[in-house]
Image (tube, rainbow, N blue to C red):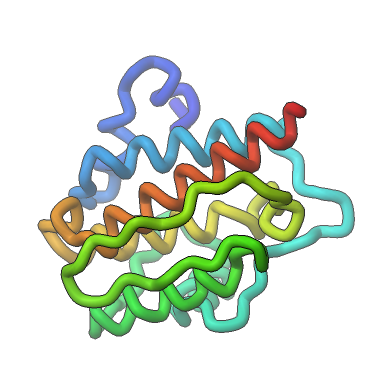
Length: 173
């Protein structure tokens, strides 16, 4: 049974618990938002093979891509704070110009802007789009048993879900 069917059947815990990875339940919301986004493009990449900008992304994503996006690959994250900082820097650079977001640091929760705008720069369906963002958050959460209490991770999951839902909504208008 594939992950999409597991989510439809209400068995999202089987998606997040695979490979012995213990992930917070909020990760299921992230996977569901990603599936909804991909579904809104009929699971087809955009013409021209557009991809999210790779500059500044966590190096582990490049290693994963070079391994053919192997779902069993679990990269080493030696310094979780550095990974989180790199991830947020990449995420902030991916945002449209009109969406000026601050990157969180330390243990302080942040409020991210929730305005609507044009999402064309981030509207990259397919394997070169949000799949990489979701996978990178999976690795981050898997490195610590308390990701659900890390305000940087929870803000990241919340913001990525909101952005994916906003993009899916903009496609239907």
